[in-house]
Image (cartoon, rainbow, N blue to C red; front, side, top):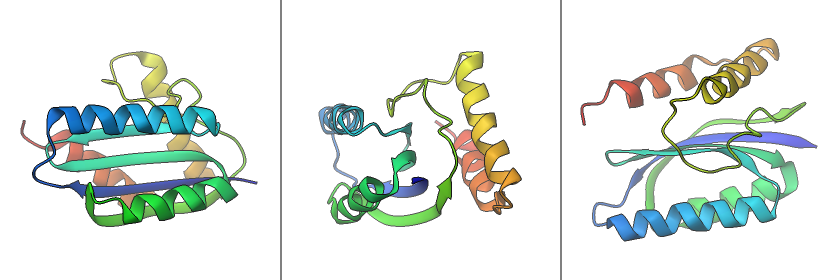
Length: 135
């Protein structure tokens, strides 16, 4: 069974650029090995991540994230079964969303959530807050 987990958290204040790069590289390596797709965004002191993949693995992964000292104030936005993956182009990497295919993947994800009667308003509010933050 496939599932998606979406969360946001606050990054520990003293994370260096090297710590953040290491986190992104660890995330990509681990998620690629376990066929997890999604997106990881860091803006200011906020992490925002969408994960998709095997329900069994995602539950283990999220339990590990909840114990990770680099995160605080973890708020789960979604934790629900899905019928198919939306972020195959992302491969759980991180990027600046500039390409139409990346925006399409995010739109596709939201459409699937909406069609499965998920309440996406909290999700959308969090995305908007990340986009509206001052640099």
